[in-house]
Length: 390
Image (cartoon, rainbow, N blue to C red):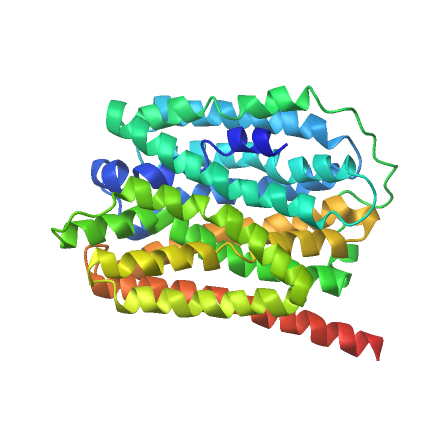
């Protein structure tokens, strides 16, 4: 399943990969428009995932996984062949997001349905952390293809990735969920589950920060490289390393959560991530050799809470509503992913554009403010749980 997910994710950041070097100039996009384009995939995901993930409580998630992977491949190919501006790009990216909604959380449900009873924390964390490795491959393949053959090639090449998940699905044994009661989109039992909702809302804050920086990391390092004549790592290398480091960071974060307590570990990571984001923003005009260590630290702090949040959600979910809980988790997360991509674009416009250091200070301040909502959500869930117990 982790290998299949690498294929599913190959097109995932194709749009952010080619924004700074190609699309912003060719399509004459403002920062806000570029953010909308980059976030449209998450928006399509957000619209579709409540239905598709909840359906996994009623039918074998493998069936949804097959359909979602096929749509993701087709929509990515159509973007590369036919997108010619903001609106057509948003349409095809949104369609790809709908396809990915049938691949990511249904893939997690397909995995958990086939695991032996007991603590699945490490298996879930390995699956979620492989997401970051897939994003790193997406950055690498997309940018190399764009530099070699033009930006359209980035989409044509990466469209083949989701086909790998189709092959994996053929190896999965069929599983039939037990009959579910209630309406398909009845999320009241999920919302009443306060421990699970704390992780869901915390995941939303995490996604706001994660997708915000993933969308704009290439543009930020392009700014750093242009401002300095020193020999530095290219935006391709920085974006790939930034993404790949997320896998060990997520695994380590979950292990710390198991050892020191999930809420405490997650909150500590989030506070640390906000602090590092502010440092990067304050020193955005410094030497790349000064900024590079901060970026690498940020590459650890941003994803270190991901596995702990998702495995915490899966463990806190009512087994009868695990698919619905995963749907809520993804809906909140990818809603704030889209908001994060757009908000950073708006912040850059407000600060004078991505070629100004002051704009990056505003942008990283927005990222810091977003992630600080995570500890508040976890604190809220504990207080509510305690009040209910009393």
